[in-house]
Length: 276
Image 1 (tube, one colour):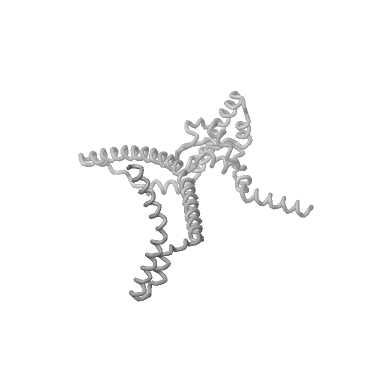
Image 2 (spheres, helix red, strand yellow):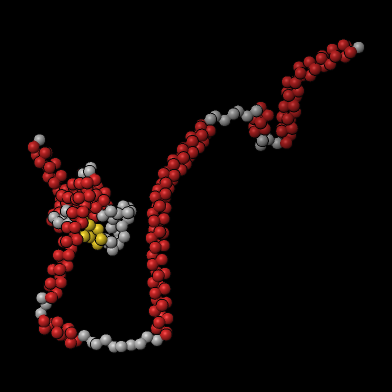
């Protein structure tokens, strides 16, 4: 029993490490302090919550911190505030607006301060570069040449600005088209249930058809009439035998109908007598 318990515990631990190891080890350390994240293509709040906090359910808290107007879509290049893990958990569990606003404002200020410190450290590293290399860079940089723009260049620049505006409009149209395509993709999910229903209906029709055909094949054939039996039996006989057989058949048939004819004659005689 203990061996089984240890095996299950080890399997659970391995699963947690494989699925959330990078988040628990890497991103949690990175998010000891709030940061500002630049959105890349294809990112959204639930993905950021899973990557940095190990829980995609924190996407609501992230959207609340960033006051996102559209929680289902964020655009590349936007700055997203990533609070530290403990504060984000408190925001997700809090039910008071005052507490949430204080936490959000605090995290926004800390994120901006942390970003400014990183930028100042980067500028400080640039200023402490060796002066010789800076002088060489200044010496080797060519002096800008004065150039007067002609009418043709001014026209070309105007056309380029117009093309840039058209490019922005085209990008917005493409974004709208992508949202429409996402709606079409959601509606196209009905295709597979309809196709499955059609397949089941077709299988039921085929089964009923095969069963009916099998029953028809198993039904006994009806016996042929006396005339048909006579024709089949004497099909290979000579014409004389066939005519003789037909005469016998005709006489037998007439004998069968004699009582009927006699009864009709009696009824006719009664009708005549009544008429007289």
